Image 1 (cartoon, rainbow, N blue to C red):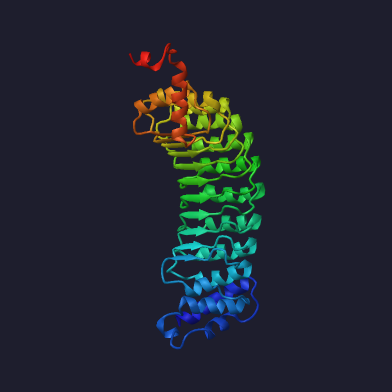
Image 2: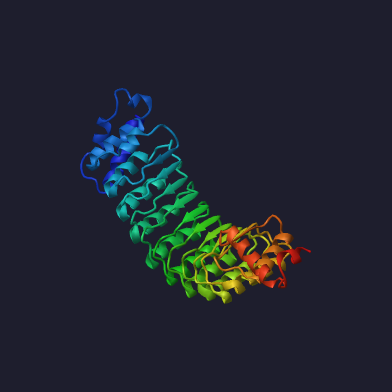
Length: 385
C-alpha cells in the first residue's frame, strides 16, 4: 500500500528528528476510511497526525487555506516543533510551490527540519524563512540542503542573526549551488570576515541573479572583498548592499568592479558613508560601464562635488545603459542644476532623482538664476519699457 509505505517513511523521519512514539501508527490512524486504496492520505490528514505526534496545536492558517500553490504561515508562532510537524506533512506534498514561514521563531532546530524536508521535496521553488533566529545551526542546515536541492530558485533568509561563523556555511552553498537565482541575506550580523568569505563565493557562483545583503556590518575590508567578487561574477544582475559601511575604500572597489562587470543592471549603495572621494571612484567605473540601468546613491555624504562627478561620468559615456539614477538629498547649486539639465538633454529617457522634491529643486534653481540676473534700475514700468 502506498499509504502504509509513506507512513513507514514518515515514522523513520520522525525518529530521526527526535520524535518519540509510534509516529507511523499515529499517521495511519488519522487516514480517512478508504484513503489507503485511493493512493495516499490528504495533506491535511497528514498534517493533523504529525501535529498530534509532535504535541503541537495545528496552525489554523493551514487548515483554513484555500487550495493553491502558495502556503503562507507568517507570524504564527510555530516554533521548532511546529516546524517539524509541518515539515513531515510537506515531505511528499506536490501541490505547494511557494512556502512562507517568516517570523515564526523556528530557530536552528526548526530550520533543520524544514531543510530535511526540502532535500526530498522537489516541488517547492520559493522559500521565505526571514526573521526566524536561525543562527549558525540554521545556516549549517540550509547549506547542506542547498548542496542537494535543485528546485529552489528564491530563498529569503533575512533577519536570522547570521554572523561571520554562519557565513562560511552559506558561502559553501553559494559556491556550489547554481539553481538559486534570488537570495536575501539582509538584516543579519555579517562583518568584514564574512565579507571576505562571501566575496569569494560570489565570484565563483554561476546561478545568482539577485543578491540582497543590506543592513549588515561590512566596512572597508569586507566591502572591498564583496566588490571584488562582484567584479568576477558574470551572472548577477541585481545587488543591494545598502545600509552598510562601505566608505570610500569600499566605493573604490565598487568602481573597479563596475569597470570589469558587464552584467550587473541594478546597484543600491545608499547609506554607506560614501563621501566625495568614494563617489568619484564609482564615477570612474560608470564612465566605462555599459550595462548598469539603475543606481541608488541616496543618503551618502557625497556633496555637490560627488554628484557632479557621477553626472560627468555619464556625460562621457555615450554607451551608458543608465535608466534611473538616485542621488542624495543635497542643496542644488547652479553647477549641479545645469549639469542635471545637460545630462537630461543628452539622455532624455533617464529618470534623474535628486532628493525626491522636484518643486523644491526647481525653486532653488530659479533662485540661483535670479541672483545672477543684472539689477534693474528704476521702477517696474521703466523695466517693462
